[in-house]
Amino acid sequence: MKVDIFEKFKNYSMKKLLLIVSFILSQNCFSQSTTIFTDDIDRFWMAYDSVVKLNNTQQQVEVLQKMYIDKGSVGLKAFMEERPFKTEDLVKIINGFPKFWASIRPRTAIVKSKIPEMERSIVYLKKLYPQLKEGAMYFTIGALQSGGTRQGNKVLIGSEIAMGDKTVDVSEFGNNWLKDVFAFSDDDRLVALNVHEYIHTQQKLNDQKMSLLGKAIAEGSCDFIAELATQKPYVANYLDYYSQHEVETWELFNTQKEGKASSQWLSTGSNPNLPCSDLGYAIGYTISKFYYQNSKDKPLAIKNIIEGRWDDFKFCTTFLKDSGYFKHLKKKGYRESRYSNIEGYSLENDRLKFIFKRQPNIVSFGNNGMEVFNHENFEKIKTVNVAGDFNGWNKDSETYKMKRISADIFELELPISEVLKKGERKYFKFVINGQNWVEPQFKTTNKGSADGGSTNLFVEI
Image (cartoon, rainbow, N blue to C red):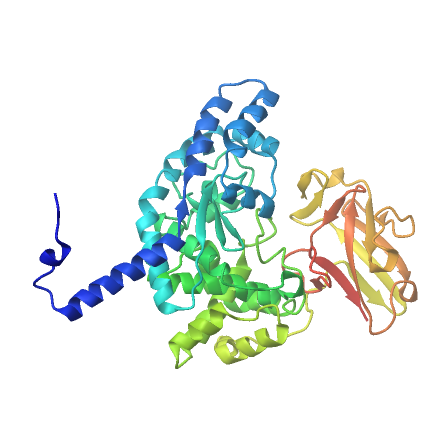
């Protein structure tokens, strides 16, 4: 049947017609550039059904590789580059957590129903920020590596984390990380998470130059802009915790903000020493929100937040000052203080004493991943060494081997002059049993990193 489009719109004025055509063209043009791919989810579950029927691990790996990894989208390939895992790792997780996979499966099916809402949010984001560049979203299944990340203009979602909520069975896990994350997750957060990662595709930053403050704002600002784009409050466990412990948390963050270590603030995972995961996001979100609220020109504020030079510490400190957040903190009782909670050493006259003692949780990382020592298994600690700037980070140095002076304490005493000079700062870590590198306690203030690696203790005079 032939349809005369002009006949259909003959009762519309020319002005209305032009508005309609312009709207359709703008919508079509933008929707084509923000493609959303979900094929990896379907491929994973097809492979999963085959894998769980097999009893041989090597066969499981081969099937998963053939049916899922090899056929994966460019988004899955990019996800595996940004959050590395092997096929063997995913098979191990499939076999280890059957209740989790059974309960997350129906949740991943919801993704397709949320696509229209995601697209609307991106369209509204472009209204807020007309300079928005095109991108693509890929929903994958990872190995519990990340709920979301990005590579170039690609948004990469780990759906097995991103789609979790309170209904998902996490009883098989040995920590509360996913439980805490899922407690604040719902279907709306999926949309917000995607917008968050989409905003990251607009940032052009040098990660190697970023301070902890810059990293926190780069992440938290994406949460805040996502809140504006979705027109719904951004919900996360770290925002809830930070609102209740704002001053005490900022006091710890403030002593570390110039350094590059972020392992206790961003992408923290399941570290049991932390009162809440990913508190750096909450700090960046809050600073960005204050900046926006205190700006007279809201469109310019959004532009400044998205295009912020977060790899420039001077820019970050100026942004922090302009946000007015310090005034808010001072009204709540914040007073700037220097390192008040020293861990790992004491100074007396010309002697430096390294001290390692029993804690409720001692988190360490070694060849077998994370290992936690506490009151119940502290006796498993047979040796403790000190490795740091002063001995080339040699974890086996006999000179820096500590002596057990009681069931709960190891010590090593040296002349200060053998370790550092006045005005110097030296970073160090304790090493348990020759292989497990110990993370500092969360409330410790003498910690950081000069090179952006893991969080280290430091000694200075």
